[in-house]
Image 1 (cartoon, rainbow, N blue to C red):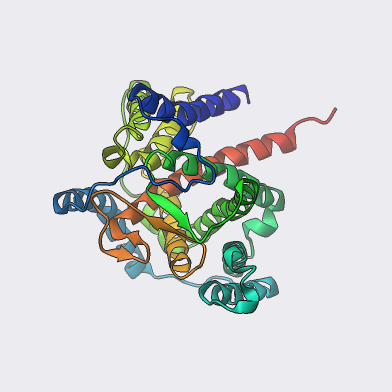
Image 2 (cartoon, rainbow, N blue to C red):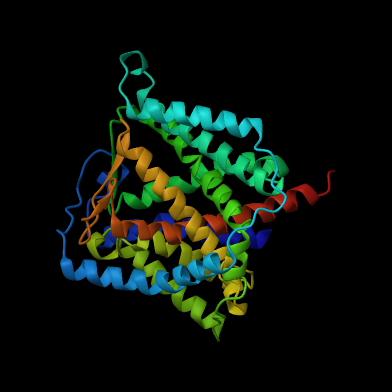
Length: 367
């Protein structure tokens, strides 16, 4: 457990300090990065570049295409068979009803609902979480919400803390901002935390559903072994490079904005490797890609619903992404969806760490 706290302190310190250190060394004003709620736009983003769009697209396709082809072949070859399907629970039906009501209210502007109009995100996503768990229960008579209620409830406050880190890092690149949000500092902190608290339960719930699919198990349980030699040296190199990149996101946000999503993942994986711990990429050395692909796919799936439900909502987020801000699906430029892939792996890391803490706490002796 000491290693865990040491790792968390190093990780948190790097995320908080390195971007600030970068702007201090660059001589940029500090005050604007601490405005709360954030309202001032101080990053001027680069315009669309066809060359950059093509280059980013090629890199993304090179990563995603082999996995997508593997998944489609497994799905077409074996199909998805329904084994031992259980009745859809009543609470899942209730979740569908409340979700539809919340969706309608989010996309309409009734005068009688104007006081609550900015607050439709939470009931919509709570309904989504309930429905996802209900689908998993119907599939295998098990779901996270019922099987591990303590762990499930703990995800909500951890999720809020987890997303605030990304809100902090976004101060240095300003890739998204919120509109229709008119709260004071304390109100903003409270209502934003409520919304952020649904992220981990949603993504981990979808991942559980994906892992329950037989075709997915066939596709990625034994895929393509990918191991690395001299892992400690590699971990040190990745840690230093990702840390340096994190320090540069505020200095050159147009060129390093993608590291907002990638660097936190690489830092925590490097720390785990240096401490001799298992990490999210450990399985691919023996050809087991299930954790990696299911986590990335779960975040991408949730991302689609996040962007869709956001589109016509009153309180919403809008994007400003350098070089590739074109061909939008809802508010998000199409290449921006690639950010959900490493984000899903970061959620997997947090989920795995939380599970180990929860198990340790349950086994700890009571004095």
